[in-house]
Picture 1 (tube, rainbow, N blue to C red):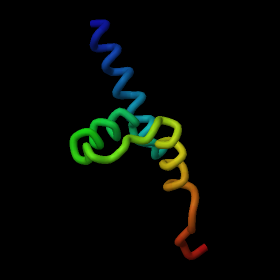
Picture 2 (spheres, rainbow, N blue to C red):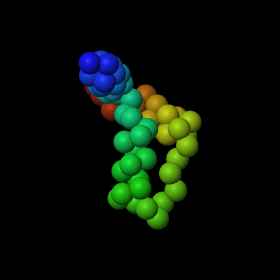
Picture 3 (cartoon, one colour):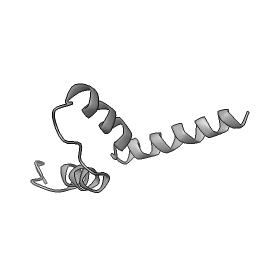
Picture 4 (cartoon, rainbow, N blue to C red):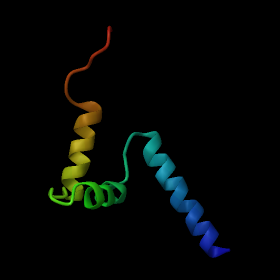
Length: 64
């Protein structure tokens, strides 16, 4: 029972982060290890900054 509650909490946290556009660092690390083993993995701080910049920074391409 406790395991199910912990798992549900984990899924809820992941869902909330995805709703606001913050991908999981652990998913990024797993992807990099599997798909790009020759490239360096960003630190959590660098990953967070890069995702923030990708989401909110840069040029806005909308009409108004």
